[in-house]
Image (cartoon, rainbow, N blue to C red; front, side, top):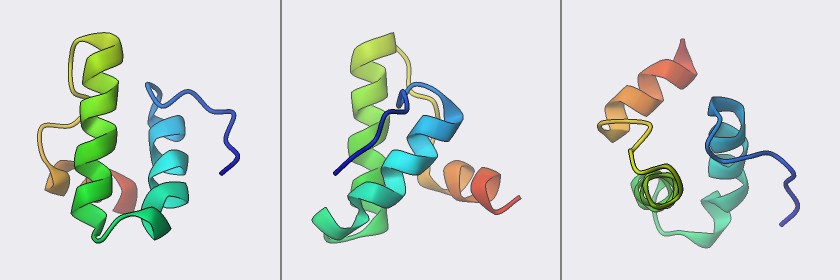
Length: 59
């Protein structure tokens, strides 16, 4: 997997989310993994829940 974007940014989170999809059983699992990783790095989760992320990416 090749990505040079920072997952703590909206674009980096989005790009990494789609790059990781083949490695997880569900879209929700990818989201939870990334949300937790960003929380580990920054101390806060970028999205409160999966639907918030989906609504922002659809928008």
